[in-house]
Amino acid sequence: MAEKAFGLSVNQIMAYAAVANVLLVLVLTAINIYYAWHAKRQADASSAQVDTSNRQREIAAETLAILRKQIDQQRTADLATVALQLKVAIHTVEDWLKRIGSGAFPQLPDEIRILSADFSIATQRANAIDPIVAENMGGASLYAGEAETNIRILRTGNPARPETWKEMHDKAASNLNIAKYKLNVARTRWESMTT
Image (tube, rainbow, N blue to C red; front, side):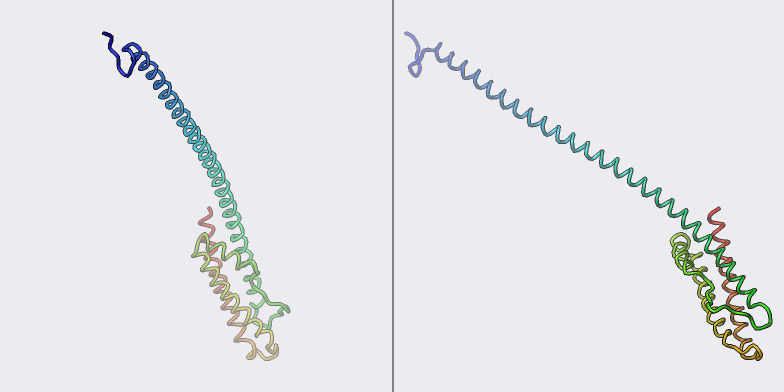
């Protein structure tokens, strides 16, 4: 008696089971291929992200190098500008001291300006590098401004009457000397820093 199940012989059941196994292997292989393809796509996307990140890192490094170069150039320009403004200011103060230095009533110009307008910009640049230099420059600017006021008042004095202008003359000379001292202190510190 031949054994049958579900109306099929054992050999038929085995054949169907083998076909089902082959189909199952094909389905599982297709699933594995799909997941491998998907994993490759993700790996390619990750690789592209790494490449993009590397490019961004290189660009950031180049930008940083450019910024550092610009900062160095600006610092060099600031050092030169401040040094020049200190020399010009000292020279100008010395000229004013010579101009009002004699005991006689000085011949004064119509416009009385001791420090240039660029001196305040140089003071700001100095402050970014050395606040002590900037502090001395600011003090010199204050005393130079006081001297300008004293000289303007001095100009209104009567040359024939020294009592009308002598006090302002002495105050202007004192303020100019203090300004010169502060400028020299600033210049000495600045030059010691830049050499």
